[in-house]
Image (cartoon, rainbow, N blue to C red; front, side, top):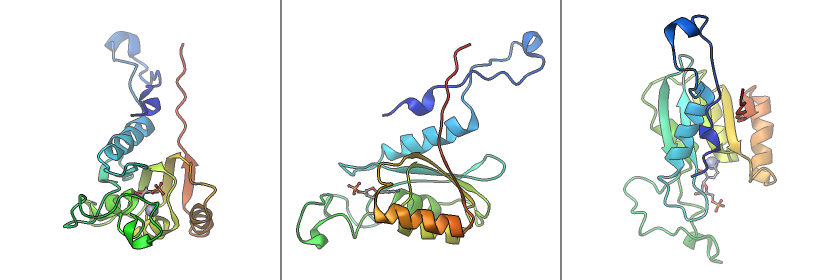
Amino acid sequence: MDTRAFNGTKTDDSPHHKLSDKRGWYINWDEYFMAIALVSAQRSKDPVTQVGACIVNKDNRIVGVGYNGMPNGCSDDDLPWGKSSTNILETKKFYVCHAEMNAIMNKISSNIEGCTIFVSLFPCNECTKIIIQSGIKSVVYYDDKNIHKAEAKASQVMLKKANIHIRYYMNFSVEC
Ligand SMILES: Nc1ccn([C@H]2C[C@H](O)[C@@H](COP(=O)(O)O)O2)c(=O)n1
Ligand SMILES: [Zn+2]
């Protein structure tokens, strides 16, 4: 697993640091939520692209987690994981549930309006539509290897129009 998300930033937000001996070297919220998205991706059976997503509310509570996989009840041994067949029905394209969709479907709160979704890969157009309809207001992404694709360009157009804040996950590890 890519460990870039785990490089804890040296944080010392306690004015009483010296008195309390509070530990100062802990991961921040962004690092925590992205690490959960990345570790969730490791559950995926997709041989090419593993994606994870973690939805967080305004109180920094996790309200949904997911990764890309086959639909419930559809054995992931029976449906295709490849993408090279000339018959599109023999590729994963029409079958895989994307991580973002699964995280939203797995939500433990009836209302996820105003939440942030941490995703290990920039969302495709289909997931972007679901993100918008769910009321999620912010997207933080880790990897944008698909950004040149038309799907990602459509995502950008829709996210902008829907006033959804989108930012690249950056993890600065500062030694001092
Ligand atoms: N934001 C995304 C983008 C992709 N996925 C999933 C769907 C597939 O399992 C795979 C894409 O396959 P590839 O064309 O990269 O071989 O990644 C997702 O869950 N979320
Ligand atoms: Zn998607």
